[in-house]
Amino acid sequence: EAAALNAGFLSRVTRGRPRVTLKLATSLDGRIATSAGESRWITGPLARREVHLMRARSDAVLVGAGTARTDDPRLDVRELGLGHVQPVRVVVTGELDLPRSGHLGQTARQAPLWLVHHADASEARRKAWADCGAELIEAPFQPDGLMDLAGMFQRLGDRGLTRVLCEGGGRLSAALVAADLVDEIVTYTAGLALGDEAVPAVGAMNVGALALAPRFRLADQRPVGGDLRATWLRA
Image (cartoon, rainbow, N blue to C red):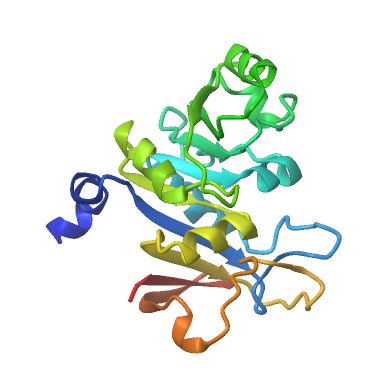
């Protein structure tokens, strides 16, 4: 029980990185938005309230640049009467090409906003975001041009983060799972189907055989309103 309560701290001390939870709110067929991009709301109000509690229990909430551009999220804690408890909002945006007119840019001085970028991000964008109040974190990139996610989490751990909640999108979720960086997956499944043309919760992973697929074991499941919550731990 003590190890579970201190899992984030123990992860940072022993592995140098925070414990990572991936949250997925999907339809029955694993979709997070319609083909037209509509995603609010797939799950019900009780599930969404629980997600705010998950944020409050995390040091940081992580999303990719695509989610930040498409959904214009707040990534803060609301509806719980805990306005003073706000996680760090972390966005993976290699070139810092996010609209500063969105919620994140407009609230960068009200709640911490960290932007993880690569070394080639323009000085003009760096200055503009710094002027907005964001903290910039330069992360290493791999030879193929993709971000070194393990290196990114090491840098987040160096800054004291112990628990990170990832809320998508599909490309980032797939990259984290494929890199074996996800310690826990929490899924909220709603009773509707959106079809093959809708947006998948997890992007392409190029898994050619079942034996190569990352596996997780079911730790808990229960109804939340009209949805089903399941918690999966790394196998």
